Image (cartoon, rainbow, N blue to C red; front, side):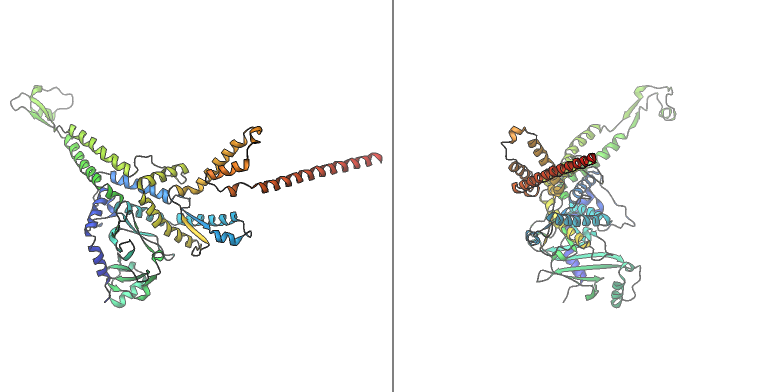
Length: 512
């Protein structure tokens, strides 16, 4: 008997109860909305924030760095290349440079599509925040022009994986007002459960299970009522699935990943506790009272009712200020907390300068970000690049009608320092030309003993550039020199002929 959607959900959700409680705690340290408490009602409850804001600052900062390094504005994060066999088949029919230009324009069109749509970058930012805090994110890629690129919060989905990390079962639970559903979904549900009102809240389940062939079968339910085969989906493999589960770090035999915040959970807890103690101690330090000697001459009411600068009868020894004396405690708390804040800052890249928030950021700035991410975050950065950038690149290329399903064109994702490949190639070319110019500036007597062609090739290869693309071979140079000499000789002949003709005309005119 086939399982109901609610049973699928309860089986997967019950296994992660303790995990959800940890996610709530990590979110409370940083961005509480990423994983709200189970009992939270946004219509009646106020969202509580932690005593400190270091967590929110750290997460936002590292997510901004990831966004800039992975999806820099106006800089393609993908590279399209024609395979060697396809280039050989083309032969001399098409200039290879023209093919590269066409592929480069396809990359730029895909990036313009990403920047034009207003739903992609916000969803990417939200997903990266989920990754940093909980270690998991779920993206939904649009399947039609009406769909939006979405990221779902961790409470709205549950997953089951194999020991090697492959997804076996994925269950998504979303709540809507009945009127928000598609019309055909409303009609399908009314055939099973008539009398549903537009304002009634319903639960929509999407259950995705892996089949024996390695593909995936999708079924949809509303309040445990199966919508029918018209709403089913079948996908040949995970790459074809519009739902993508991304993890920060995934251990063997684990269903869910772990995030960066989990690695610093102890430090966040310490900063939270000390921030609370610091605030309460500061409030207490502001409190003071006056002790008045009941047998003295000074009257308390004279002090309370007098104005500033007034002269009062009394004895100064009758009045003594009473303070809690927590100033030293505040200093100790502050000094200890700075150590924790510094460690968090190093782990979340807060110690470096903040990159400018501008449409055009220099390659050097992005290079610094990429280097810092690669050295500090290591494998997590690479995992995100592979699991997230590849499906986004394929989807964007399809959106601009550029199919790469065949073997003629290969797609590669450029990450980290490689993401600067185009600007890096340009910088390398500038440096190579500068080195060549230095060689050309040598005295002619020195150049006579040098094989300039070999030197030029060595310089190009040393900068990681294809010498065959930029440096001409000796045969080509010899042909060009012969052509130039022939052109110069022809120019001399033409000039001599023109001069002789002019002289003949002048003599003829004189003779006449």
